[in-house]
Structures are given as C-alpha cells and as structure tokens.
Image (cartoon, rainbow, N blue to C red; front, side):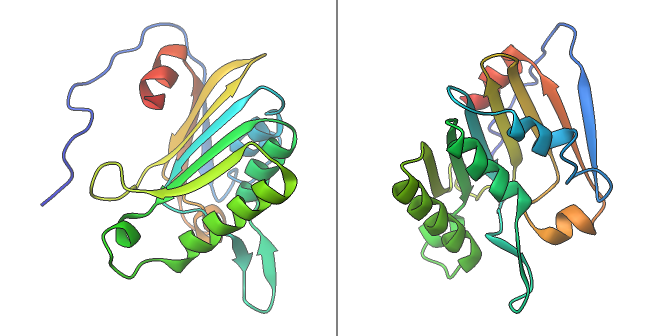
Length: 182
C-alpha cells in the first residue's frame, strides 16, 4: 500500500522565476533570507498557509526549553494581522491509533493563543490524502510582493534545522501558488 498520486500529471509553469535555495543547517534559521525573512514581511491583509508533517511547540530539552523560531514566526505574522492557517499531520489521531502528542500540543497552543489574542490564526490536524501529511509546504501571499512558495525537506524540529542535511526552495509564481493552494 502506498500513496495514491494526488498530482498524477506533471504541471508546467512558464515565465521567469527567481529561486532561492535554503539549506540546513547553514541557512534554515537565518532571518536575512529564506522562510523566516519571508514570514517577517507578512502582516495585515497577507496570508500564510502551512502544510507540514510536524511543527514542534518547543525545541531544546525538558529542563532547558527553547522557542521554536519557525512557529514563533507564524505567530508573529498573525500578530501583525496576517491570516495564518497551519495544517499538521493527523493521520494517527484520525485513524484512532496512538500518535505523536507533540502535534496535539502544538495545535492546542496555537488555538489557545488565537482565542486569547484574537488572532486570525487557525491550526488543525488533518489527513487529506488518507495516508498522512509528509509535505513541508508554506505558501505566503504578500499583497505588496506577490505569492511565494517555500517547499522542501525541512521539518519543524530543532534537529531538522540545526543538524540534518536538508534543503528547501523558495520562489514566486502566481500559477504554481494557486495550483498548490487548491
């Protein structure tokens, strides 16, 4: 049993597109470029859509917790007025199998924060393909700059960002954005 191909035919997008490559551990947490720089520019009237295998609530250790800078960047975008939607893998919970409690903690935290601060921020667990979410996709629609796609292999853990060899590409394309958004 494997994934059913959701995108069974290749899509071709024409035009000039600038690609930015972000590698981990070297560049994934820089605020001067890449995902964090993109999210820093999101504010009132902008939209951030996240579909992610997981996004840890905290990094560090139980005795020395650290803020997850990616998660914090999503929250800060919502605090500046952006509409932020986060969908994390929920296959094991939806199928009734004991799952990753971290995803539940992250979603509960984000929902609570959204209520307390009256943010346009929604978080959920999902299983749109029937075999869980494994993507690492962020779509950012900045009204003044256009629509940017950030996609790659970088998960929402400290190890993925600071230790593992990971890669993401970031590029602007109205057509590709719309295709991936739906």
